[in-house]
Amino acid sequence: MDLIKFLDEFTTDNLKETKTSRKDALMTFGSLSKKAAIAAIPFGLGAAFTTNSMARQSTANPVAALQLALKLEYLEDEFYDLALQSGVIPSGRPETVYMQISKHEQAHVTFLKAGLEGAGVTPVSKPEFDFTAGGAFDPFNNYEQLLALSQAFEDTGVRAYKGQAGNLMGSDFLTVALQIHSVEARHASEVRRLRGLKGWITRKERGAGMPEATQPVYDGEQNTTQAGVNVAGLSSGLIGNVEDAVTQAYDEPINAGTADAIASLFIKS
Amino acid sequence: MNKEIKEKRVTVHEPDLKAGVSRSQFLKLSGFAVAGSSLFLASCKSSTGPDDDDEIFDLGSGDLAVLNYAYALEQLEADYYTKVVNNFYSGISSEEEQVLTDLYNHEINHRDLFKAAISSVASDEQLLPTLEFDYGDLDFNNRDQVLGTAKVLEDTGVAAYNGAGKLLTNADYLLLAGKIVSVEARHAAAIRSLISPGTASFAGDDIVSTDSGLDAASDPSAILAAVGDTGFIVTPFTANNLP
Image 1 (cartoon, chains in turn orange, red):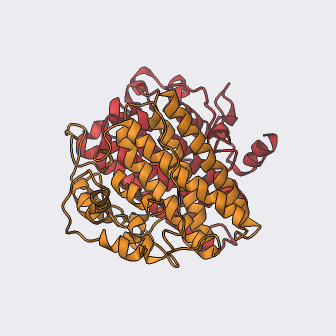
Image 2 (image 1 turned 180 degrees about the vertical axis):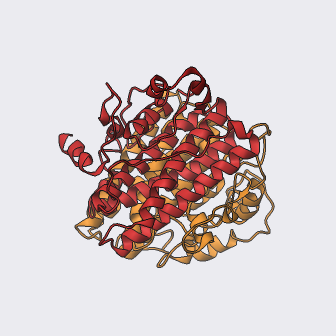
Image 3 (image 1 turned 90 degrees about the vertical axis):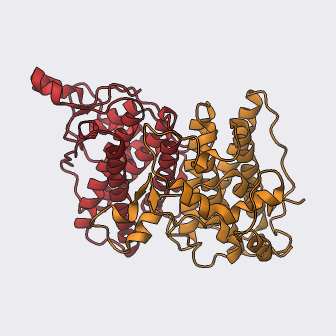
C-alpha cells in the first residue's frame, strides 16, 4: 500500500458524507476543516448544543467511545512493546522515556478492558497490527521512524480521547477517560521534545522530520476560534507570533471516524 | 515518599498558614484526594464584618461555577508566568526561556478566553473579578523555585480540569476544557523534563498511577483548599456550590 497516496485520497474534500463504510469514515480526514468551522459557532449557557460539537458527532454512546479508546491503546501498547524489544531505542533518556510510556499504555489496555467487562460489555479483541503500514515505514529498524510514529500515535491519542469526551458525558467513564487523555498528552509532549520539537503543536505543523503521511494527525490544529471567540485577537502582551501562540494553547479533537482511520492504517485487513 | 515531599519543599513557596491548616495540602496533589472545605479562604470571615461577607464573590452554580473556577486557576497561572517572564532567573537556558515564554502566552490566552466566554453568557456580577496575587518570599530569581512552582501549578491544573469535567452539563464547555487540559498536561511534562532531564518524571510515578496509568483528578474543593494554602491568591472568594 502506498501510504501517502492512501492518505492523500482522504484529504480531498470532494466525498459525500455517510457514516457506514470504512471508506466513508476515512473521508473525515478531508471534512475536518469544515467541521472545525462549524464547531466555531458561538455557544452559551442558554444555548442548545444538539449540533455542531465535534465531540458529539460520531459514536453515540459511551461503549463505542471506550471500544475506540481500547483499540488505540492496543495499538500503542503493542507498538511500544515491539519498539522496546527491537533494540533500536538508545539507552539513556530514550529508553527511560519509552519504558515509562509503555508501562502506561499497558495499564490503559488492562484498565479499559476491565472497565468494559465490568459494565457487562465484551471488549473488542486486539487487532493484528502492521506498523510498517504495508511497507511504508520500518520503525523497528529505524529509530527516526520509530520516533515519528510514536509522536503521531501520541498526538492522535490526545485528539481522539478529546473527541470522545462528549460521548462519555454522564458516564462514570468520563473522568477516567480524561485521566488517560492527560497522560497521553504528557507522553506526546515528551516524545515531541525528545525529537527536538516543542511539546505543543503550533498551527497544524507536524514538525521537522515528520513524514508527510502523518499530516492528517495535525490538520485542524490551526483553529483559532475557541468558544466562539477569535483567540488570536483576544490577548495583549503576547510574546512572539500571536497565531503560533494561540494555536499552541489549545489542542483540537478528532472524531471517531478520523481516529479509526488513522489506526486502521496500521491494522492488517 | 519522604524524598519526594522533601524535594517539593525546596521548590515551593512557604505560604502564610492559617491556624490549624496543614501547609502540605498543596503538595499532596499527586492524585490523592485532599479533604477540603467548599469555603475558599474561609478564615477571611474572622477578620471581616457581616457587610464584608456579603461582598465576597461566590463562583456561582452549575456550569458558570466551573467556568469561574477555571478562570480563577488560569488567572493564577497567567499572573505567575507574567512575573516569571518579566524577571527571568539569572542563568536561564534558552530552552527554559522558550518554554516559560510559551507557557506565559498560553496561560494569558486561556485566562482571557474564560473571561470572554463567561462574559458572553453571564452578567458582570457573575464574572469572577480580577484576582490579586502575592507570592510571599518566593524567589523569582531562583531556578528551582520558579520551575518547582510551575510544576505544581501545571500538575494542579491537570488534576483540576480532570476533576471538573464531570461537573459540566454543556458538551461545548467540556470540549473546551478538554482542549485546554491536554495543553496543561503538555506543560506539566515539559516543566518536569526541565527539572529532571532524562528521567521518567514527565509522567512520573508520583503523578500517574502505576496500576491504572491514570493522571490525577481532584474536586474543586480539594484544589481550592490546596491553592488557598499557598497564600498566592489574596482576593477571597467562595465556591459554595462546587463539590
